[in-house]
Structures are given as structure tokens and as C-alpha cells.
Amino acid sequence: MSQLPLSGVRVLELGNYIAAPTAGRLLADFGAEVIKVERPGTGDEIRNWRLYAGDTSMLYRTLNRNKRSITLDMRSAAGKQAVLDLAARSDVVLENFRPGTLEKWGLGPAELDAVNPDVVLVRISAFGQTGPLSSRPGFAAVAEAMGGLRALVGEADRPPSRTGVSIGDSIAGLYGAFSAMMGLYQRESRTDRPALDRRCMDVALNEAVFSMMESLVPDHLAYGVERRRVGGRMEGIAPSNAYVCADGGSVVIAGNGDSIYGRFMTVIGRADLGGDPELASNAGRWARRDELDGAIETWTRSLPRDEVLARLEEAGVPAGPIHSAADIVADEQFRARDMVQYFDVDTGGAEPARVGFPGIVPVLDGRSVPVRSVGPDLGADTAAVLGGLLGYTPDTIRAASGEDA
Image (cartoon, rainbow, N blue to C red):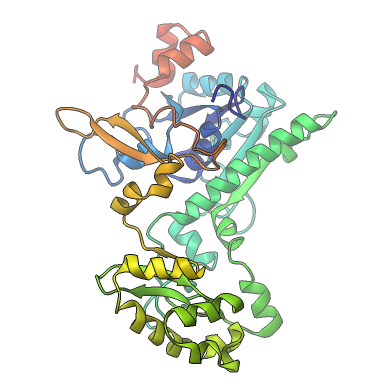
């Protein structure tokens, strides 16, 4: 694809961990030049998260694909000046430090606005830039708890669980990328210059999670409903759950649509349940969810997973296998849309390994946009960016990047 939608947009990413880098990744995926600033020596901490071998984790390589990495000591005068010089030449600045940190370093909104009155600043933090909790640190785990998600994840008779990924960070990253696009659109569509406070986008992790909680609060305030954990089910909707098959594989079946339900019961040989007037709507089916799940699993346990899925597909009942990583790699649907893309990557062995990475969403022209590069080595682009873009001398580059420290 010769011209990506965000070609010509430059993003300065000051964030680390997952939230801001996810926003930067989404912008980079579609052509934005994303310059990732990392601390000298150690870089972004996720370089070491789930690091099984080598010196850079696959998590880092995934979240920071299509970016350039430079090292800057932002606490030093030279590093601070480099940030301002880069911000002056950027369309968007992303950051996810604790509120007040950039201001303490002399890199806050006022300083960025002074060097670039058109810049869009996206700020991602645990609880936002204002309010009584704004100064608190917090990771996605805390945000997921306070945003209402954790209370609904897991089995009813067990403590709340987590989803297995840092979903709160990823949701905030999506909002961060959306905020950047909103700021750029506002800037381009208006004849007057948007005020600084309209170019500063404030994304809170706990609010990003809360925004995904559907009608959790409205149901509580309107009906006094306090939703509870229901395991693999969805409150008020049945039958929809995970079921074990004869060969030990598992499937998720969503047979909860009123018209789908009847076809589903015919497939499993329970026309009596399909024709029961009490089960004609979700409310009635939810009340008898244990009975329905028992009947369904009696059927699934009698057949291998592939046969279960084939019969459900023929009947038009939504269902799918519960995939492992190996299943995803082998899945023909993912493969047809280039949703696993391969690179030779240093994994700590004598030779690079061929590693598959997630493709880019959304798909354009029927297939994933090609991933241009995986997350770079620490500081791989420092000289090229500071020397080429800013015209810094080698001595200035060393001072700004912390090499002189």
C-alpha cells in the first residue's frame, strides 16, 4: 500500500508501558511517523516484561511496531531541549506519566504550546488530570477494578478475576489514538486555531474501562440491579456459554437470539426445549440457564469439537472454538486476512527466529496492512532522528541522549 491514511503525521511518544504505546502503535500502523522516546540505559520497562530469552520481549516488539526509538534524558537540559525541538516539529505528543510530571520537567502543555501552537497533546493517566485522585499512580489492574470490570469477571463463588491481558491499558490506548485523531480533525477542519485546553486530551484509565461497562450504572439506578459475576455467561442472556466437547476441546456457543434458539435446540435434539413457551425469550431462558446449559453440554460432550462446530454452522448457530496461540497461527480465517505476520527476530539464540506478530486492524482492501517493522532496539534511531530531523551535532546528540552521563 503506497500511501497510508496517516502518512505525513508525526507523533512524539513520551509514554511507556502499554497505554500510550498502544495509542502510538495504532497511529504508526496507518502511516504516522512515531518517534518513541525512551530513557537511556534501560528504555521502556516492558522491554523486560515476559522476557524469556534475549534482551527485548515480544511484548515490546508487538506494542512498538512501526516506530522509531530514540533515547533522551528528559531530566537534563539537553534532553528537555530535544523534546521541545521534536515537539515543535510534531503534530501529536503522547504521554502517560503521572499528572504533573511533565510540568515538573518544564515540558507541560504551556511549554509545548509555546514551541508549537498547533500541537495536539494526548495525556493518559490512571485517574485523569483533575479530581481528588488525579495525583495517584495506578496501573490497569487498579483501573479495571475501579471502573467496574473486575466485579463482573470470574465465577460467582470465587474472587474477581482478570482477563489475562492488560485490557484497561489497551482500551485507554484506543481512546488515546481516537483522541489524537479528534484533535487533528479539529485542527484541520476549523479556520481558527483551537485553544490549548481543546488540544489537550485527557484520558483516564478507570474512565476508559468504565465507558465499556454498557448499562451497568443505568441498570443499577433505574432498577436497583447489582450485576454479579456469572462466569462464561452474560447476565440476562441465555444460552451463551463455553462448553466442553468429547475430545477435550471447548467451544463458545451464542444461541441466545430468539430465532436462533429454536434452531439450536433442534440441532442438539431437544425440540421440547425449543418449543417451550417459557423459553421463548431471554428472560425465561435466563431463569432456566442451568437446565439449558446442562442439556447443551450433554450434547457437546457426545461429539468431537469439529463435529459440534460443523453441525452448528450448518444450522446457522453462532459458535466458535476457544483458540490457543497455536490455533490462531493455524486458523485459515486469520491467515486469509494476513492477521499473523512474520519477522526474523532476535530471541536470544544463535540465529534470529521466525516469529509471527498480530496484523493490523482495521483491514484495508481485504487484507491487513503490512506491518513495516517490529518494535526497535533501544535507541536504534537516536542519531538519525536527532541528527537528520533536528540537525544536531554528534556532541549535542550525546548530551541529549544521556550518553555523556
